[in-house]
Length: 317
Ligand code: UDP
Ligand code: MG
Image (cartoon, rainbow, N blue to C red; front, side):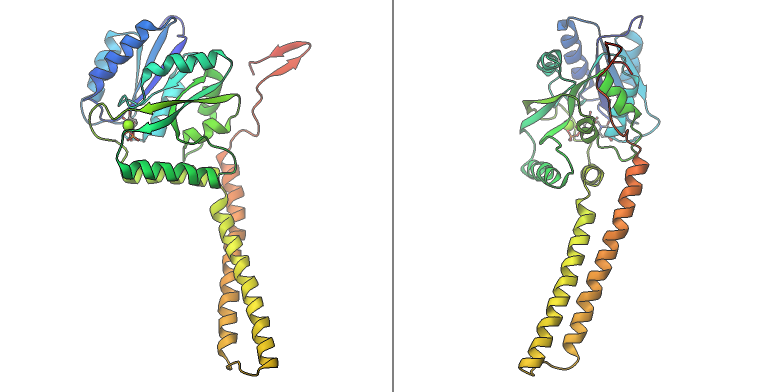
């Protein structure tokens, strides 16, 4: 492409050949309506159906399409990350290949971006998925919000439009266990959400197996919360305190009523006390591991959004 486009659409694809023709039609129709140059970055996440063949054909015949083929299935979060690395647009929109998130929301997203937001994400108001899946999602986002060290927006996935500077920062974050919607919110800047109804899948089945979903969920909780490890410290301290209280209680009873059996209370006291000490020790080790984890994640220490130097504003850095 001669000059870099204004808008990029990133579409991760894993065995989506059934929906591919529809996807292309929807994107083409949308791009024809958009005032400004567009590109689509199709990312094949190691599909083993006809998806790569369809992509090649599209990439060779239509210059607006960029194709990135991963060497195997790395997972949705990594496919989107690859797309972010290669996207050239000033404004980048991430959509799912199964058309569950309507690409036409582009116009609403862009309106917000034009108002000065750097991140506009979709908030799923209604999902057309099974009751169990909906309940699991509902609970997950609320638990995540409850335990997370800072606010991650509720019910929002990777469907979003971001500016180039946010994309550049996300690409530079080398986190292995990626939870994009988390780091996207972590980077800061002005962010807002738009409510929309999530459609049912266009064709085919969900490519997120239960196992992949659990993995994604735990990446969310463990990457953005210290709650699980703090919990052990609290339970440990609780056990030690109750052991001491129990000890005092039995001593008093022994002195006043002389009805305490020999041996048993001492045994119980020791079991609770040492249980507590062990839990507390796990918590203490956890605190160190957590600090190592934070260091290893190598997130930037801070992100500058604007600087003024010599009476001039500097936004590129
Ligand atoms: N996807 C991917 N790699 C995977 C799983 C999914 O690239 O390992 C893609 C998939 O093709 C789709 C998007 O990620 O475009 C969302 O996946 P899916 O619709 O299966 O997830 P769900 O909507 O059920 O959460
Ligand atoms: Mg889907």
